[in-house]
Length: 353
Image 1: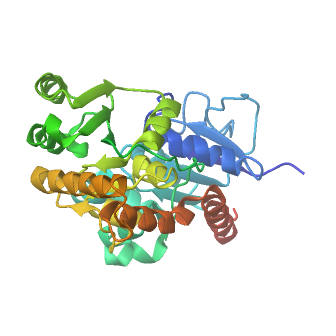
Image 2 (image 1 turned 30 degrees about the vertical axis):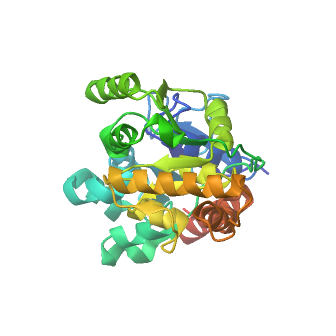
Image 3 (image 1 turned 45 degrees about the vertical axis):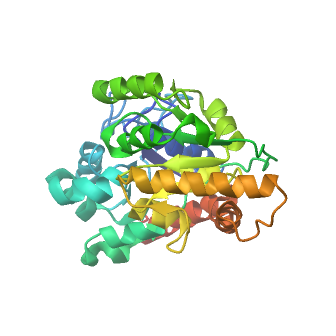
């Protein structure tokens, strides 16, 4: 008996450093034992038409398949064309729309196309528990929380003679890297706090600021874009992950730090609160470089106490590590897979034709 078909739409197909692509690729792998999954940047594409009933761009084959039973579309705004086409072509088949940070915290308030996607969807998916609050109350009943996941990396024993902080995020406004640049200027070499910044330059002004900061602050390095494997290793070897975003749907970097035993210092925004919990100790107000710097210095002081053999069970680094460890179970691959399969099954059962 052949597996049922579904189509998975993501605005970006080829950039493995993009969070949407990582999510789509992981979900396609998780769903493929149960479904024939077509992964495409838009639907229908050149290979798809109502007459041929092809299921879109398939990376493994272009063989004929029955029309998919459901569409899973990442990004309410950027995938709005595919969402509209599906709603018109297959109004009796299930449509699931996954909301990103820019959807939740910008586009659904400003963009009619994003708003239309919310109305057309049978189900809405948010990637962290605070995301539900950003939705209109009338639509919250059709929303589900699906935490993303990643593999577990071993927690390493790390030096106490210095503190290495890692920030992962492309140079773009939503990530608010200016907060990190300012914090780097507030620190000095005497602090023994070093910052590695990973991310591609998507904004020329921010690129110049990163280069200027690196010249002025030898304890700050901008490493540009690195492979996912190398990035994860640097997160694993860091003492802390810094996350300065002003807008976030559910950051892969935060999840990967938690799953690597690396505590996080994060901006107090809903996207981070929904990942780390409202009672997490490692928040600073968005854009507050002084508060971030103060937290870095507190962590460094904690290190010194550890190095000198003083008790650290109530120190900030220990507390953050414990809290991250407690959240780690949320980001296990089997938890994500089970939630995803349950959602697809419910959607197809509710609208089987």
